[in-house]
Length: 295
Image 1: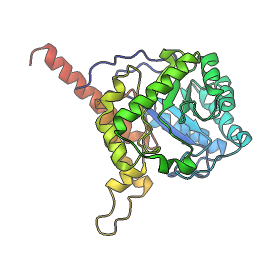
Image 2: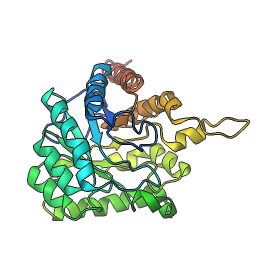
Image 3: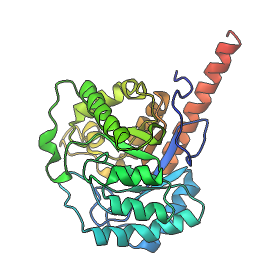
Image 4: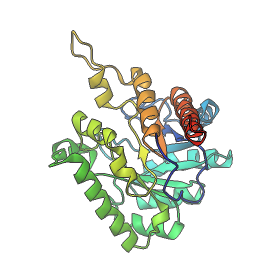
């Protein structure tokens, strides 16, 4: 049974008695499971509002795919995609995260109403990111990252993936603190699928306690990822389960992550995960009540 959170939650984030649900709004053409569906800003805004109606506590808006092999988009294009969506969703009262590796995009998105900066590089891709995060005071998701999407698969070499990820995230946190970012702004993400094999991803999920022990909120982003497709592959042909048919498995990972103490889970299909984390919260509440009553 997970205990009450031992971390201080960054300002501006929803205070909940359960794991939070972050819905994904990809304003891209090439994201691995929904590229092109919400590329039009009006459709992306409508999708973000629909995610809230289905149970999302916050949404993560991104204008650049980070799937394996993805090529970067120009800065101007990323801004064109992201800013109108962030602005409208924030104006509608939603807690918005901007998913970007560029300091300029992060800065302008926060000005447009974004409450969180979610950088899959943890500030490594753009040296100016730490300054922007420090200056804005925005909560900052520090993901474990070893290199750009185009060549990250060759970087999936570890002595002990759990120990190495914890050590490398600790180095990143120390660098951000030295650059003026406050500790209570930081949220950690193990970077599932980023320079990780399926075995690495499962090892990190199985030892999520090693990350929560660092004393900061932990975000788990497993939704529809390839390692779930591999697990659910057709036993005869070996064909991977298609990305959009991995939502039940995603909800299971969400429930187990919530049980293990994750602050939030980032998912494409919100409904199943929203139900799953509420079940976990009710279960944990009942278990704590039973302990108090000596049952």
